[in-house]
Image (tube, rainbow, N blue to C red; front, side, top):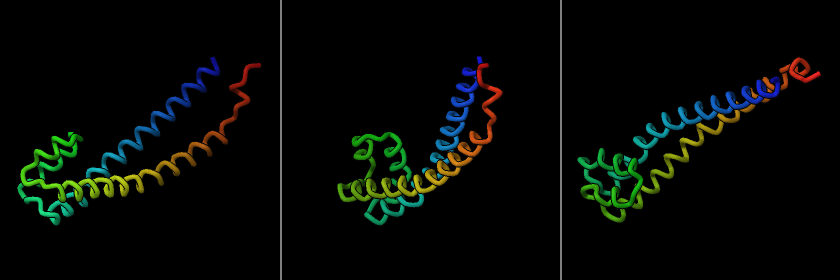
Length: 121
């Protein structure tokens, strides 16, 4: 019974950590995609009217979806691809410090747990 409780604690801790990381990633990725992809695509020659369509194509994640955007050209595709990679890179720069902080808190919490009361006698 006591091992099951420790296992439940570990699973719950991991679920909470993953949830926090995903929330941070999703919130920051949306902001970064708007900040980096739209200006890069417009600068490469994408029509202003197609700026919203590019996000639907990025969300679809397929080459045909990107190629179906009105006014898209090969040089714009390359620029958009590089901008998406850059935006995700910037997003992970926020997620990783959160992971480090969460991991440090988890290690400290686990060091403070008195395992003697959980041990089988």
